[in-house]
Image 1 (cartoon, rainbow, N blue to C red):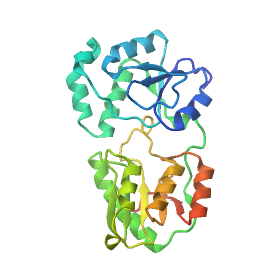
Image 2 (cartoon, helix red, strand yellow):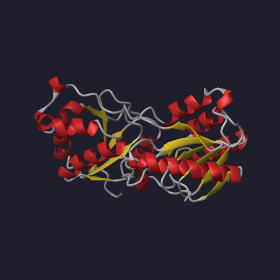
Image 3 (cartoon, rainbow, N blue to C red):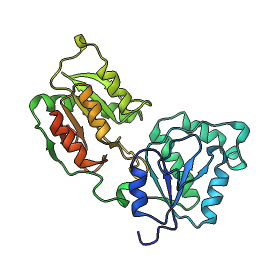
Length: 271
């Protein structure tokens, strides 16, 4: 993008905001109070209870594009601090917060669009964040395929309910389904599952985009920590969708998978 001065980066946690900032060095960086932000030294902090102040700031700077990058927690609202903008939309904001991530982010996107600010996906700014279909470590066998097919069936159902992006299946059984706590917590729960409930040797972590998910503002992401967590949970493979899941530190992910004998598979959903 030739002119990044009219771009705001909403920076959450992790490495992705920094990768985006490297490409958009003139962009305006914003963090939100009470939420993780990995670009603290560059960021102007706003309060979610005062979105009117936030949008006035963006409009005064001539912002017309927004990139949302990094891990972001749901905001904690305090009605005593609402500005007029939030007061006027309090019911719709509270309703959105009671729904799943897709519904909440769709609502947030609508607020930006109302201000003539268009979302841009981090993957459209930083090249080579996603992967083409293929087996990048280890191999794929029929046990893997059976578990992947079962996982994809589960994800199809949870997607329609706007719940999570990942699931762990072992011997055809669901060992973990991602909820609000996130993928790492799900993997920790699988790791701590007692042996009588486990059939070690073929378990898979499958992480995919939800159906109708707006990938401009919320693309599933994995990285080296995901690989380490999957290994600690004694899984056999990590599976993601081609071109629709961000992989941070790809070379390190591949190195870890090879070192830990963990298959890394990029393939479309099983029908």
